[in-house]
Amino acid sequence: LRQIVSLHNPGEALDLQQLLLDVADHSLRMLTGGEVATVGHRVLLDLIARRPEVGSAIFKATLIEGSIFREWVLNVGRRDARTRIAHFLCEFYVRLRKSPWVEAEGFDLPMTQEQLADVTGLTPVHINRTLKGLEKEGLIRCSRRSIALVSWRGLQEAGQFDGRYLHLGQAA
Amino acid sequence: LRQIVSLHNPGEALDLQQLLLDVADHSLRMLTGGEVATVGHRVLLDLIARRPEVGSAIFKATLIEGSIFREWVLNVGRRDARTRIAHFLCEFYVRLRKSPWVEAEGFDLPMTQEQLADVTGLTPVHINRTLKGLEKEGLIRCSRRSIALVSWRGLQEAGQFDGRYLHLGQAA
DNA sequence: CGTTCGTTTGAATCCCATCAATTGTGGTGG
DNA sequence: CCACCACAATTGATGGGATTCAAACGAACG
Image 1 (cartoon, rainbow over the protein chains, first blue to last red):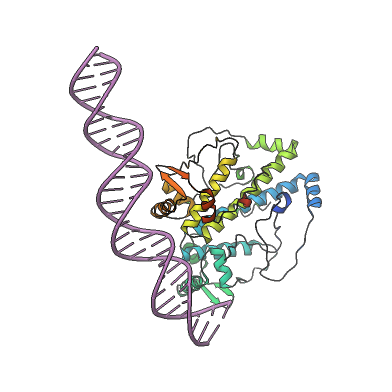
Image 2 (tube, chains in turn purple, red, brown, cyan):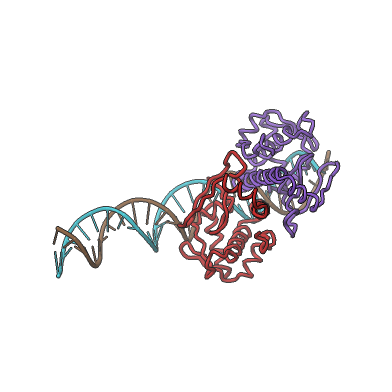
């Protein structure tokens, strides 16, 4: 059994922990195809030394990530399955639309229900149940590996979603 | 209903988000008496500008905090009540003993069962049940607002605890 | 008159037992 | 990988009682 603790959109810097921390406490995996660019520690540390603004921006991004972690703890610790899933869908949607690297046409979630379960700390079966429920309520529509928003407003309410913790517009 | 997302020992720097982030997404509260020293943004930013090592140390502390957040998501999302509580007790114990500001005599948890519930995402009643269970198993002993370790080894196993995510000895 | 010492009171906290709801398990088929 | 079902287990909800602790009060005594 696995717990997914973080998701990233194309264009985001990843795994900054490696810069200063020795032991890795998690692993990375791509949900869809794509390219990955790597930057060596030495190079990045030099850049930060010469351009403090870069360091500041990276620090800010890390603080925002921390804020998102706190919200995930709350989400997984204190909300029931329906609220929890709705909240996650809201977060994913907002972050996706805000990413300048992603064509924000429709809303497509490139995850299996099992992966959704690993994000929310539930079982795949219960994900299925609850997703069906949200569909019956008219908030979303699901087909194979794709979830479409029917009522954005409704989903926000169902998920008690307030996106301020994402600190958008401060993306350093 | 509330979710506690972080605990700190005396001597630790707190709430670094405020340095660079506008909106506060959480609040602070002390469990025991004590003193708080505040450092102004301006002062701290100036210090970092003149002494890059300080900035680096703060950044590292923030990364470690992020690592702890990830572990909490896992703990709350994927472990049952017994394992979850045991894991939290282990983390608290290790961090307490490692803190140079705390006399590491016995093990005393200055929290009510309700606060413990807010940490683990359970109800106070279930905390009570599970604590009694751990006591019956001979892993801990509880009296009013105080939990004593009986079998550290056993508690580690019960909580599937591996403290590497705490990145001790790297406390910058 | 002020001090000392019990008593009362009330607020937290803990504990326990019952019942109900959410969530997990296992299995089948598409 | 998704959908669905029946059943089981974990966890939550509610209510009541026991315990601790401290503040408030009052009576006896110097």
